[in-house]
Image (cartoon, rainbow, N blue to C red; front, side, top):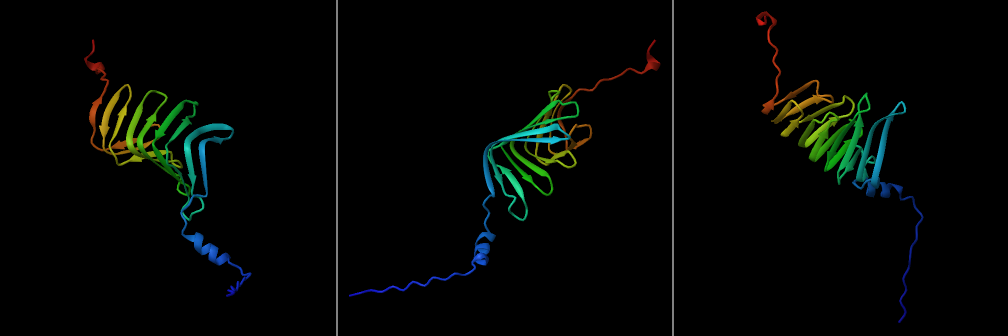
Length: 179
């Protein structure tokens, strides 16, 4: 008994089929490990980001980069003082320049102040930070907890929810009552 199999081969443009197959893929464009990114402006170092893993999703319609194993950012102020931001997870949205930091988030300032929370958003364009989660802030004059934070990067302008903790206030005597 003899079996016969006929094979038909066609040369056709399958690019439409490939595009359809890849359309709904959510795979990253690239994966990098042990990264170190240096951000500069006018040859001046602005920030250095390090992370064990970086996932690049700039191939999607809403582009973003993900740091699933945490990240550390050392950023410098105008006097080149180091400030450090650490989180267990981070995601950077390309178009909005909004960074969502989650899990054991710590912002350590060069002056010794520390902000800790479970989630913090950083608006890189306006250099503004905010959270709706509980946070703790400590420095030489303050040690308090609050539910919400909306502040500029220098903490010279900020709003919070109800405060719980201690705040050191210095009092000056009125010169009318002094001899």
